[in-house]
Length: 465
Ligand SMILES: C[S@@+](CC[C@H](N)C(=O)[O-])C[C@H]1O[C@@H](n2cnc3c(N)ncnc32)[C@H](O)[C@@H]1O
Image (cartoon, rainbow, N blue to C red):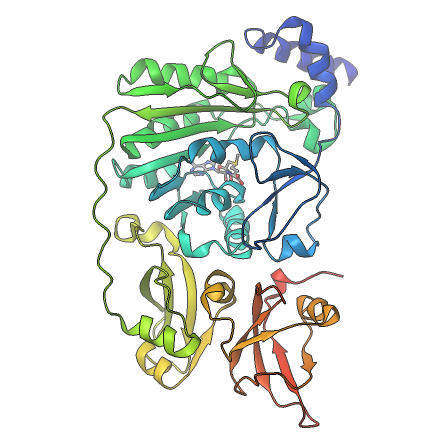
């Protein structure tokens, strides 16, 4: 066994020869065998969410801190537990003002959530069905669905259909993950010896080319991997640049260090930054930026009026999309304004934030008029912040015990409210700071005094203790 580990290490050392100084090899191997420092990022959903811990140097919202999946800050979407080196890719891609951004290999979604905090529309795609579920869950948990179109397909097809139209593309490519030994809590030798041979080189090259084609002139892409083998990184990028005269490497000041093999691309090393290993390259499509098309004029829309009538929402949240499920069940969605839904067609899994389901097989207009609709948790979390603070359909949980009970999925009985909400309808349940936690249905409690709330927090978003 030990012999196999040394063999795997020796072969790997050979592969890293052009990028890692010999004098650093021992430090690198030793750092790659230490448990990974845990880290998380503030998403912006909870304005005052804070993480106490050392800051991640390349991301002002990233911290080294122990946050668990059952922490309230995580459950309510205030923070995203994310490896620190991996935070760098979206951070260097986004420059501000991007409208259409593609996250080509997006699941489970850490970088999608980062991108959605600034870009107008993020097309987040992944090829794996099982990983799509966690992508959808994470986007929803962090209140980002209104700006995210979820696609399920091969990124090469998705990118081809968006040819020449994207401001930015992130290719966080499938890779060998050769230094994820730290995450697996094992030595580098054992990790490399047990990893199956990596055969994705051709796919990485095709993803990079497809991403470049999808860019409009002046657009930028970031190619990243959590591997340190040059065959998956510098060599892929160098071959691409050699074959593509319209592409130019954009030098990066940080994070990590410039690669000795291809200066301008960056490497984050476990022994230098005390993170997992990471590689990133930023590439621009020459040709200057096209002027932005004018903002589309706001059209009068029946659904916008209905949203105002039901919740007092005045904000223009995006474009409305009606979907018909099975034969006669209608759903209303809000898609990001620049969503290329017609282009992406069947690949679109979720066009944005699902607002409501019409009940009783009614069409949407009639269902809304008769109040025969079921508003969704996604709507509450993504759009609830636009409901005025004094709206009668907001119920604030002032007591910490009530808050925890609600997050555990329990029904609640509250004292008489200052503003009694209408009975028999769905209300937003909020924390004292205004953060929307989810929905509940109101009714009169058995004794007649106060307010009973039937919990509608979906099981996947509940505290598990
Ligand atoms: C390194 S992971 C992405 C991590 C993700 N960017 C994040 O920050 O959470 C690579 C992803 O690529 C996906 N993938 C593999 N082949 C693909 C393809 N041809 N098209 C799209 N996605 C693909 C895998 O399912 C995997 O989720």
